[in-house]
Image 1: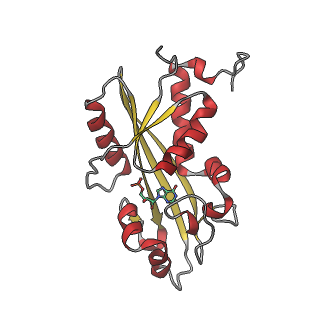
Image 2: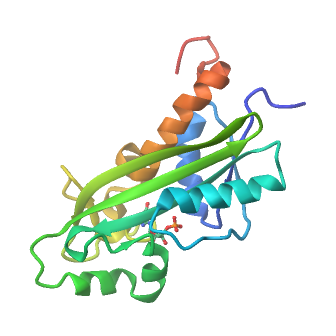
Length: 203
Ligand code: IMP
């Protein structure tokens, strides 16, 4: 039987991104599936362009699905926004310690995480949902939860890194959580039953 609420297929090899998406969207009754597929990442300063291109390209071969691609980056103020769209490469090459070294003796530790989430599917033009979380780079890596730069990112108003505070806290404030909640709001308008509890009340 076809599900009344169609799943969001998240194209990523990163299981932790899928877990974060599930923790957020499944509260709204929106099923999430992982599509583990190699994506084409275009060279662009714009996370939105990167996510949109990959989403539309993958969607070409499975037009009936709701297909989502998200692209995120860490933008450090004192490095003029670096690594930004190159965050994945910088994480693989310099790593968390390399970023800390770039900021050694730097008083301005401000940084933001940004997320662009592209959704393609039948009957609508690709939608982009964005999320930004401002914060600062810690003086050293702390915590073991999450992935990527979580051990060195402290969101504004907090004292702990995302990696120390854990998934539930991260999913309240993160760039990805904000973008996925916007997607949930859009989805709820098209499939209103997704936002209803079994007793018919809004979730
Ligand atoms: P992409 O969206 O997979 O290209 O992510 C780029 C890189 O940014 C990742 O490899 C991570 O290093 C980093 N990144 C993206 N989102 C997060 C996050 O939520 N926490 C920590 N690092 C992240």
